[in-house]
Each structure stands twice: as C-alpha cells, then as structure tokens.
Amino acid sequence: MTLPAHLFPIPPERIARYTAYRVTEPITVDGHLDEPAWQLAPRSPRFVDLVTGRRAIHDTRAAVLWDDTYLYVGFWVEEPLVAAKFTERDSPIYWDNDVEVFIAGRDAYYEFEINAFGTVFEAFYIWSDAYERDGYAAIPEFAPDAPGRRDFHGVGFKHPRGKREGFWQWDLPGLKSAVHVDGTVNDHSDRDRGWTVELAFPWSGLHWLAKPDGRALPPRDGDVWRMDFSRFNTYREAPPAEDCGGWVWSPHGTYDSHVPEVFPFITFSTRTVQEAAQNG
Figure 1 (spheres, rainbow, N blue to C red):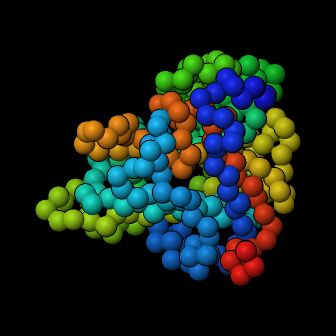
Figure 2: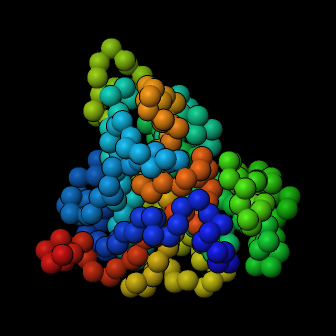
Figure 3: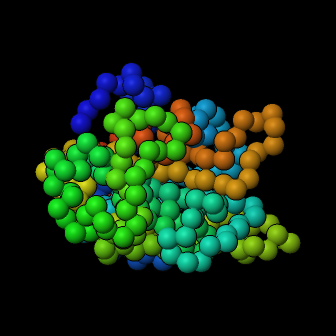
C-alpha cells in the first residue's frame, strides 16, 4: 500500500538512497568485515540523530552487499566504552547499546537487533489491514494464536495504516550474524575503538516479505527495497546537544523506528562491487 508522502515526517527527497552491489567471492560472517568486498563497498554517511538529523557524537556507518543467496549488511561502530548486558536470545536488546536492521516488504517488515555480545533479537510485523487479505492469518507461524503474537501500535508515530500484528518469537531461518569488538566489553578502565557487525540474511528466509507484491528473490537488477539501519544507545551526548539516543543512516523525524515510509531506498545492482569501484 502506497500512502501520500505528506502523511509522514520526512519527505521523499530527504530520504537516503544507496546502491547495493553484488559480491562474487564468499563472505565469511565472522564480524571482522575484512573481505576485499567490504573495503570496496560504498559506506553510508555518518549516522545522524533519529529525530533531528543532526550529527551524532560517535561515528557509525553501514554498507550493503548481496549475492544470489544472501543480503549482507556490515556496521562500523565507534564506541569508546563498549558495553552490553543481555546474553539470552530475544532479550530486549533495545535496552542495550545495539545496532538494528529493518527490512520492509509491502505489507510486512522484519526487525533485527544485536548487541556487542552478539545477542540477537528478532521480530516480524504484519500490517493488520493486510493480515487476512494477504493470507498471513492462515500460515501457522503467523496464526492468531501463534506464540509471541500481540498487537503493536508503533512507538511514537501514529501511523496512518494503524495497528500491526507483531510476532516476537519469529526467527529468520538461516540467519548468520557475528560481532567483533576492538576493545573490552564492560571494562571501563580502558578506552575501546568500537565494534563491527557482519550479517547475512538469506533471501529464502525473506519470502514472507516478498509474497504480497511478488517481488523477486534474489532481487533483479534495479529492484528497490526499503531498509533501515540504526544504532541505539543507553547514553546521551551532554547538553546542549539534543541527542535522542537513536542514530540512523537516514533520519525519521520522529522517535519511532517502525515507519517504513522513511526507510532508505536500497537499489540492487547486478554490477559487482569490484566493477563499481573501478568504473564508478
């Protein structure tokens, strides 16, 4: 469903756009981001405040690559005092310092979070206006009585589509994730450089996002997806900075990650990242 742009806090011309290039060599998901492809991949600008779009105190950047099997995402996170608390999967990682990825389809979207321990949180959301229409309600993992299902109304923005069906015990099959810390977690006697995150989302596991509009998996050349890349912190920059604690690739204009209409536009190119780096 496409809604008028004026209903959302950020106009389309202010939303980030990015081209994701293909990789031809295997990527080992170990958190180091040391494959040549990651060195060649265009990185995002420095993340900015989720609400105001102002420069964040620490540097955060992301990049996207892909092949026929996986969507790859890398994060470079500057963090002088790396900290984490949660170690159990699907704990409320959003109460830790974390990085997050949202991947949106037409009528549903997926949320992924990870902290410096490598602990993962996942959830899947289906817009209630499409829940019956698209046949999600008849799928056992999204049934009305599925474990972890509950209504979700967003965080701070009153979305014109209204309520979502949220599934907090849904896991993306085949997901790979890893973290590398350049420093020491929870040891504030020293100063850390930060941490890097390496993710591989299998296209086969994203088929429930692609189902309503029949989009290709893997994408075709020129296909555009909406994805969000963010970082949330348990601390704030000192006043007079207006730091909301959430930093993103592209600002939302509201304290709410659950607004796919303001997610960056990710265009998939069948050019290899090597070709793009050589030829521009």
